[in-house]
Length: 263
Image 1 (tube, one colour):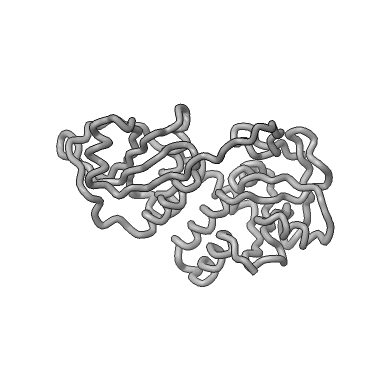
Image 2: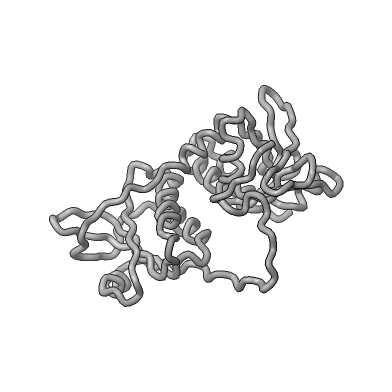
């Protein structure tokens, strides 16, 4: 059996139940994963009707992180909606409905109660704070936790096509303040908020929500970019996929600005 990122994150969480970082990493993977939600009938526009099951003390919808896992569970072809974990959690938030993930099918089989999904939605809603400061000097990043570097690498990998490169360095600001700065180059216009939010989530889900990481957006020709490139740790973001000429109607939940409507 091929293990998915959710399987691996779930196994790490189960192996270390007292490790908050492992638990946070699982929820991070859940938010980023594409999930296949079992439906009663085919979607009608943006309206979907999930199958709801009463299990233990709560009601749950069923979702799987692979389409074949959904088919294996149902033992037949069934209607479904493909949407991200964050979109599904947002859709269920406040409904008193939990998520049965990969139920009885995969190593990551787990029942997530409504309270867990509510916590995830609240955590994902924490927006970065805007501020202004003038960098004076950059240096190689020092003593950064490995958990943060791994979380950053994973988050930036999900930002396919939104920027080209990211440079992480220690920074000294005008006035003597110090910290760490992530400079992003080649950002798509309008993607700045999403990118800053992804970096903020990397902090939170690495267990370092009390820490701070500044984010700035630079052009390739900005003198600061050249200064950063000399000393910084570089991340190369995945290039965008070549779009198909054929227009395809987006699936419910694929647009985070237009979440599906639960019926």
